[in-house]
Image (cartoon, rainbow over all chains, first blue to last red; front, side, top):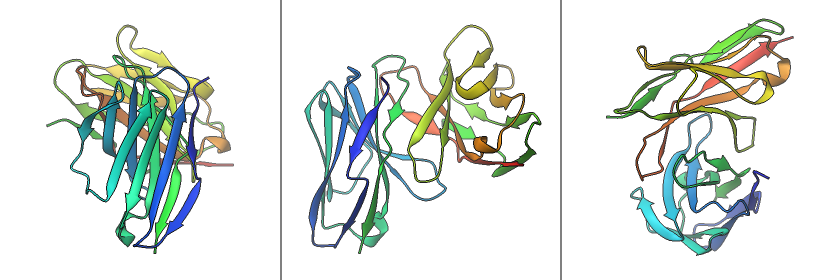
Length: 112
Length: 114
């Protein structure tokens, strides 16, 4: 099963809200990723977790806070977002090494 | 600097005709190469990859890709296009190191006419 699940599918939040995006995989992958994707553009890498530890932060603003509670779960905590943060947020996972990344369906976020 | 180029924003093809979506890359060493497809309002779906071996790689839904080291290209092909193949296609490269980072091309929209 090559499935990555993400909740919620859609999220609307105000600039003062706090919300969280969730991602789950049960493929035994030890690398997990958060991407941001604007319409008709390629995904932009935000964070990489390897063995539940943050290994890459692509200079993402601190209003985005990732968390990896265990090897199957990845969260992205959102606080004080800006309207320009509205996008599709994609989670992915991969085995370490060869690293084919498998993507979830994404959370479409709208910041008002 | 590493980069991936997809020179065509859009490719138009009639159903039943062969299709090609082009990709060239600039990465040092021997990279891993991938194709992903994205349908509207969906995540990216893995189609195929090249790591080593045979230059012609077969993937999902009848797609295949040809790796050409001398031209640093990895073009996606399908012998007979379907209307349902209409989607956004991304070529991606991963360096053979511990960064696990994918470098994506800008994407090519494939439109298959009935």
